[in-house]
Image (cartoon, rainbow, N blue to C red; front, side, top):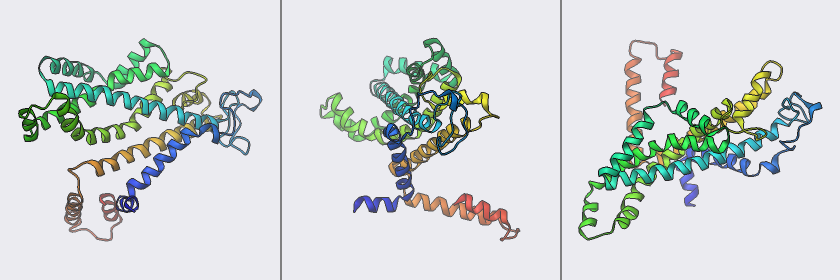
Length: 311
């Protein structure tokens, strides 16, 4: 009953959770759902248009595109979750250490973070992946080297804020150990915000992995991966547009769902956002709308479009 009540109160989060769970199930059961072997090349079936035998058509080697996209779901989702987990652990750990202990340790961690932030993310990732060599594992390492700074800086700022609280001072006065303060007071208080950040980063991580694979620095053949599938199909844009359409749609749908899921999760876990503040913002937007509509026709189509967007 509590779950049903929670879903009713947060319908958007419930719907997006179901869609995200569906994507995870597709990634998990891809070998069962797939209709063909995604690695089997049948040259006489090359570049077949979508039909009964091949729902999404075939690629230049005659491999079933539908099956390759399903297996690509497993590759992309598993790689993204592994990458987010690694970045979360490394960045959060370094951020907590920097914020709690301070001094020379904080200076070293933050200066390294500043150096990494000073470079454009994608360019630095491509440079590191190029040095390590093209592979999915090296792509994960490259993105990890660049992306941990976000979590480190966020965790450090949260720890510094919490360290000014009275209960932290009381815990120190009573002789609480550092491990006790970290595990009982600091980590539980910063965890919700960091989880929201990780959830919203899943979509962007999938895009980064797909970008590296598209450029040839990520997944290598014959691994079915959406970015590399786009790279393979760009030469046949006019002859076989389905080679680009279906992998592109897969990336678009998955990224949008996980981005919206992260936003919904933020609305639930963020303690600074409640129903009163949401209703207040809605009333403010309605008042702004009424002011903007003064002197104009209330039935003008543009007014209805603006009102719908603000809602």
